[in-house]
Image (cartoon, helix red, strand yellow):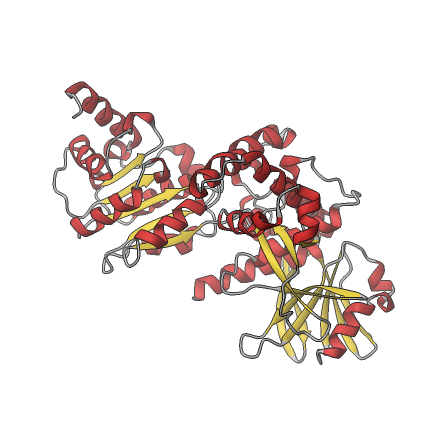
Length: 476
């Protein structure tokens, strides 16, 4: 039982976190921060009162969840919500320790002076710091039918796991990923250098986006690869000078050394760290259980579990392999692993320069990371004894290849398309008449050996995938 002094301290803190009770608006610092494109997908879910569900905003650390929640408060206020009935409570503050979500809702009502329980919007930020939060939240949803509860958390793996286990029918999950290159360009107010263009893809006119200033776009693409996954980092030169301190300590270490081990009962956190470091350095490479065992020192029996844990934390993505005829393998002995956010590599090692020998793999990682925002689609890659194609799209209906992409950070293949032997071989085997190849800054169509080869700059392609993904999400 809390004493009167402790309760007063909690109430004072809640008042401090909710300045709009007095001013009618959110703090200027939050209001000046640009909105993520994902906000337009997230906000409508927060208004859904017909369905009795809590909204769970999850995602990796530092992708802008707290800022998005303050932008949501601004949206509530703009649309006429009673300021006295919007409560924002940051669970990680120690002053709230050992209080249930219902207790905190009760104190919020006392703090605002509005004891009516109906018609509230209640936001609990960083909810993972409360033990059994999902049980508390389910109880609130069931008890207060006219109040909308919204929670967020950085431990994406834990939140997803607990939300699925305990919140069936009571929670709506919303994943906020790292920035796409499209979002990066938008947040940096660089859309002036982007122009729409058209490509004739087998008789269908498709829109893609390029630039009148490809040198400038490429410079920003490299910055995106090094620092661009996190909104806070792209605006801070100080953090960019030492990304390791910021990203490694606040994002990687907390997830690897605390979140994942506590959720899955991992005792040897250094082993998990070694495993993730191996993947980070070799993002985009093909692996097998044997090669991962040799490179990381992790026993083969644990490797599959570790990959699953890292995928659930939205740190890596496993991509599966097909052969030169587009057929899947019965045994998945080989696979590729990609970082979901290329800037994780800069945090653990060093930022890449334009001429770095490892840049090609990180260009590939960056392009794959754009596709990872499509939770309804997973790309494949093809590899056989004498060749490889970087990315393949398979039909949902018959699982046959419908497009092929070769990811290059070079202009040489525009001049020498004969060197694209693997891509041409694959297209012929799978009856594809058209293929796509990325370049540094070459655009155009070259017909070679009966195949139409479309060349698009890698930065343009990454931007296009991200922009088209957001447009498709808006339509869903």
